[in-house]
Length: 323
Image (cartoon, rainbow, N blue to C red; front, side, top):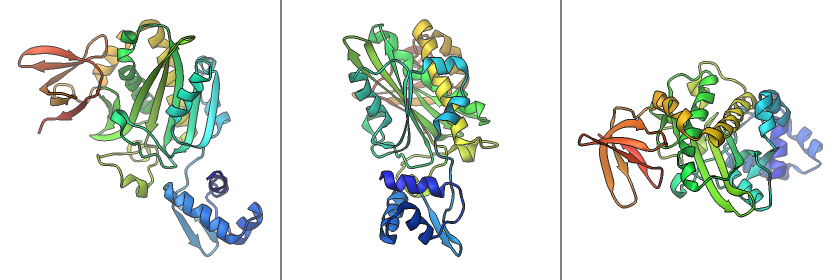
């Protein structure tokens, strides 16, 4: 697949390229170019073969570490120990969980052009074609796991604020950590942890954002979705969007490490798309219906159930508006 992605970097200029020119550039036969193109089409890349040659019909800017770093402030850059930019990976979260087991430092970041086995909450697959944003950050905590109960909720806040910085109005959060734009999912967050005897608790925060969703792979998505190119008033370049998002996550992790969830509580409640809605909270063994009234100072969901406000912590749950 790496050869296919090298071909994509050539085609990313948006200009037509002749088959003869491509075969010469890569020193391969036309059948090999055709195979690489089929591989790319499986990842959602669409091509047109016009009179002047082959073109990527809807090119997106590919990832460049220098541009990403240039778009970040000095504090966020200092918090990052390493920036890994991959063309393809099964899962950026899995990559960093393995890195943690091998002694990777705090602030290790992994980005990828595409994922072959992207992960969502509750073990669901996460559709991950070329054109979106897939990033994960490794962070270590010494505190007990109870301290981390609000972390995924806090990450939803900072990711949402970063997307607003891109000019996306009407963006909000849905507990525990999904980001929506006008009732359509724009981004999802997956936080995974493992206990490290030397470094404490290793936490990987994975963020996936629909930046420019390829239409063919999008048919696999079973819920309403939207991408940045649709939601933003004017679209920023992809590397700038990655820089904003990465900076927000790093600064958010740093603040959470020192202050816990409390500074994020009012920010969440301001962005909460479910607030004052009657909802059903589906859990592993039961369902709870009530009115959503925000989150408490630990990040727990607050539901008004028959006049009594009850907290519910992050877990194997889903939240749906009552119809």
